[in-house]
Amino acid sequence: MKRNDYYPKLVPERPEWHSNLAAKLQTYGAALGLTTAQINAAVADNRYLAYGLGDWIGNVREFAPACTAALVKLSTGTGGEAFAFTPYNAPALPTLPVGITEVLPGALDRTFKLVKTIKSLSGYTEDIGVDLGIVGEEDTVEHNRPEFTLKTETGDGCHCVKVRYKKFGHYAVAVYSKRGTGGWELLGISKDTPFEDERPLLVPGQPEIREYKLRFWDAGQENGDWTDVASATVSP
Image (cartoon, rainbow, N blue to C red; front, side):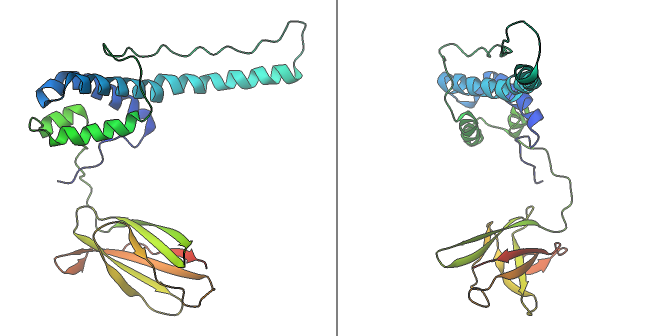
């Protein structure tokens, strides 16, 4: 069964994810084979991430209207008392593990690398992964067609369109395109996103509109429904 990404797409859900990982690493870390230093560093990273994405940024956003009001008062207010800027009181920082005194930049990148390491350890099981929050929920949606986006890139003589797609567990996708007065043509079978359309312009120096549609490709043949048609304008 295919699974969704484990890291929450919604920012408000991320503080809880980081807090859970920090807590559960202290439970499973040694059994997985992680060193005390690895566990403590990861706990510190994730406590700071939970704090920054939760209490800290929430406090900053609540403080912003007070700052705006203070500036209005400074600019056009009345009264005989001296103006004072509104002080900002940040929430208390989280407690770091013993021996850890600071958290360096790159905490989320380090966390993603640690997750890959954990999944390669001999003591790792999917049940542990679910409890740590590093295994996504099962994707129960039936996908009858790929999903894709387009991005144009020019430079060094290339008039390219990058087709980034999701194939939802299928082996590959068939990429079709149409431009000018021509019909639909198969550009290629792609199993590694993105697919790059590097065809030269039909008329050198003249912009053109390229249309695209995709289908799944498995066991030597196309299958599933066509995607909706999307277009991109390619300029010299």
